[in-house]
Length: 394
Image (tube, rainbow, N blue to C red; front, side, top):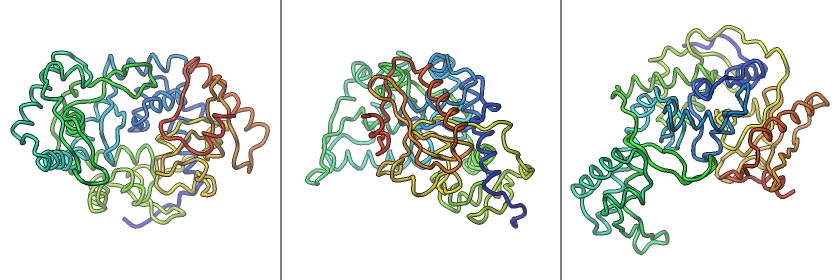
């Protein structure tokens, strides 16, 4: 797959604007369209899902209602563990692909670790855990959705506790329900359900995962990579390895299996899906966007210099590499935003190159647009960054 066509920064930003549903002409009509376009929405912080959807809808007024419908009524979107052992929101039809391509390997390690920790603490064995698991799943099926505490009413053995890391600095008391439900989530048997509070709440119920076919792991990896390259290509091998969390051998095998085509990027060799080599022109109109922390566009690639200047990162990322709320202008990150205690959406430009009156007016319109549908809800990102903290406190 020798490199053929050069795709420069300007075209990569054009692809990002259109395929990530950020330019005005590319905005979506439903949360399902957003998820289909992006493949995966980061779900670790529940508010991120709604904010990421709202930023991409042509009419964001029903963001909360429609996203809740998709997640908890129609179940056309599902919140589950995926790449890098992280919680994402996927189109439900993609659940089998994610589970086979990524979840199975992680799940095997998670279950083995749980059994090892329980054995070290003198807790009951694998047979006992299997009984508890089957009982808990049956209870969950009867209830439809339930918290861990509610499930423990039906299966009291979920309340059993064991000491983890006895004698170590990280020693702690673990509850079977917490660890087991996490394992079942990675195994694709349960998913995150409706939150206990508002759409920003991090407390949630569990639900039985939608049924899906068991797929061949290699075929699922090829399909997931094909879907992601169609949304985010071109990307380097390093980007692909980082986003999937796979071994480099898995990435290379999937690239070959999905017929990916190599192109030349400023960083070196990149990849697109086989028929994606035609030139993509910039959107019809310049565009601005206010994206939330952990947004899939801001976090989409490991090598980010083509849309985010390195000198901006200390202000926009936390110490673990999680991006905070970002301000975009024509395909690049130029600053960040936050919500203050009184509800005001405030923003700051960190990179003013080429950012004139038109850009500032467009950013202000996006801030008003965001404020309009968020209403009285107050948003505090789960992973706070230096600039977000400064702006939030005024």
